Each structure stands twice: as C-alpha cells, then as structure tokens.
Image 1 (tube, helix red, strand yellow):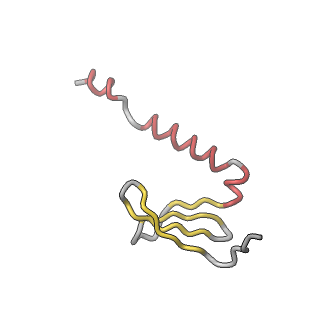
Image 2: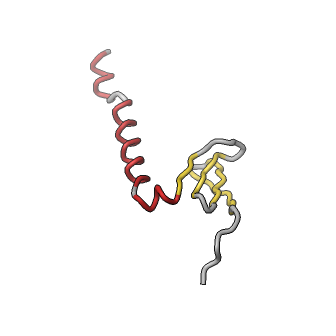
Image 3: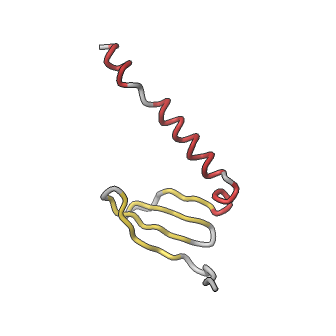
Length: 77
C-alpha cells in the first residue's frame, strides 16, 4: 500500500557538483538551486500528457539553433 502525498516533501540532491532542493507536492515537481527561489517546475498533468517531453524537445531544438556552430565561427575569422 502506498502513502498518500498530503504535504510537500523536500529533499536535497547534487547534480553536476551543484546542490539543489527537490520538492515533490500534489501539484508536481520543483527543482531549485540551493539558496535560490526560482527553479524548474513540472506539473503532474504535463508529465502524464506528454507535454513535458514536447517542451524538452522544443527547448533542445531552440538551444541548438541559438548556438552558432564552431565551424562557422572559425571560417568567419
């Protein structure tokens, strides 16, 4: 039998050498750099519906387009 999530659960974790606080609540997940107020939030409904995967793919494609390739940078010099 599982325990019902009635109040937020906070845990500290380390990612790539940086400390973060993970909060799991009935609304979703929130990952915040330790000592900061703003971070990354993910609603349970977005995770279940697949919107989270779509958003991640969109962000990855935008990040790739925003960065100039190293070859183009070398050729322009």
